[in-house]
Image (cartoon, rainbow, N blue to C red):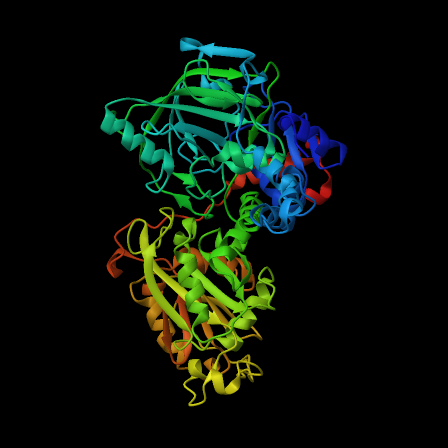
Length: 612
């Protein structure tokens, strides 16, 4: 199902009870975030704020805030259908003479929807601000979290063109408002926008930029998708394929760029590569931690175009689960067939919300020979944005990869610390605050598959066993009632599946290593396989909170090691005295005054009590 624009999708959601209107005055400064955060974490509806203080434009947020709404937005009954759709497209048959070739026609029609369709005019240019009329403060741009450096455009579709080849790119890069007609442009080193800017600098020219806000759900998703570098395949093409019809684009009014004709707003302008970069941030990021201030290019807005009655779409990122988790899952499903083309033994894979995309990848495989888990993990590290993965857990094909508890039970049962764990190095997400270097750090592979004889040091070979009925090794977890004390250990718990979690108020260097030495030597360690050390803000009884903290706060090469037979994960804060030279960022926490205000005004918002 193709939606003409985002407002048509909103109407459908409202008809289904999946979008609620709030006509009470609300502030774009933190208040909308607090409301949206509560609803997305409880699986609640999208929200349309019709009365935003200081702006004439309404704000809609949470449009793809559940798995079901994301599937609806992308025109499928379930996100798993995305994989089937792509698999059908790439599985073109040519046998059977003319009849066999004709059987491909429906697939080829789908492929024909890839190129965008040029139109002369569109709703996105019904109103035009130029020059001095441009004033970004008139837009209801959100300040999302208390320590943010200012308001940020959080759902921008940033369009550029390669100055040499003319190839288009669209990406979603946050934009901090710096003035009435300037923003930061958060182009990280691995992003296509950065490459376009570098080319423009070499050519001695400005880089034209257009930023669409809105469009339709398929285009918003496409801007987040990790597209492979295939000539002619861009985000407009992907959106056309998903919506089943070519995407309508038109020329910008002041830039020579194709822009979506059905957007709500379009910001047009340029980035001058000769200008000094500006300080951007802090920003409460998708990791759940603040990204600290850094230097980025500055975007100059020369024109703003919009509909006559536009709606400003926004999202928030932060501590999971958030709306971006469902966009990530859509990408998982969409690109699973491509991963299986390269690594055919893959049954499924999943990036759980606790891993905030790159920090944890769980992959299940049909295993037929020793070492296959490492072959698959290394193959994934070489596939596009999978290069940023920090921890890859490989399990047997029958294990449901999206069952978080089942996966970690497999790890304790089938992965012996040291024997079945392997650290390596490679590129990391530049938002990873714990890596040994900026964009570079350690990685961990855990082989939680059933082992072949060669993998356990047996004299018997897989050939002798015919790779068939291998008896799994047995590990019997045992929870101890007598847990040791340690300075700074605020809370601790052991789980029946072999995980020992300790919250540490770390005040001195080496404290986590001392704790690990003490605890792994204690009798309480005998029934455990993993020691998880987290910071003082973590709830040791909440497994999602534990793994979210651990995966954010480790460089596996430095912070994961075997001691006393246990795999120790040091997820405590790292200190300068320990050789960690970068600033450690704070976790995102909403201002208590805002929380109290929302509680006090809840009856005025008109929202059901269940979402409070």
